[in-house]
Length: 128
Image 1: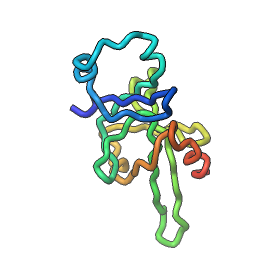
Image 2: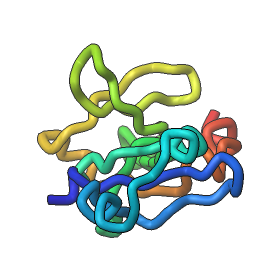
Image 3: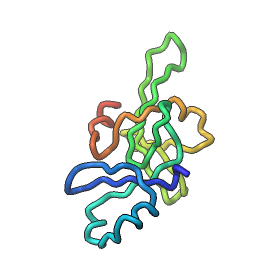
Image 4: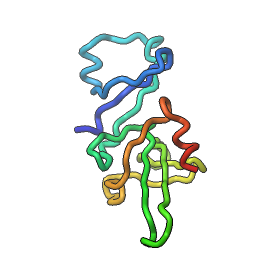
């Protein structure tokens, strides 16, 4: 069950952990609260990009498409976020326009993870 996986951004070390489950974390050690405050925890969406890579909160995903073959290619980049209001994952472009992200969204299979907001924040700016 991929949607029960997490990863963590270490604010002090500026590095991303490998995906883990809560059970794996609990078996490793009991982590004091002050240590947890040093991390940003991100949940897996349960979805995969076009390369089969799991999509997590904080990922920047890119979609390239054309409305018509004769038109120029359009590049859309979205930051993946959890929205409490909708109890769902959504994608936001650099203008903070919301796009639904969910298993029923067929176009997601065309998205590719190109980075994440912590290691590559400039990718959202380049997508303007």
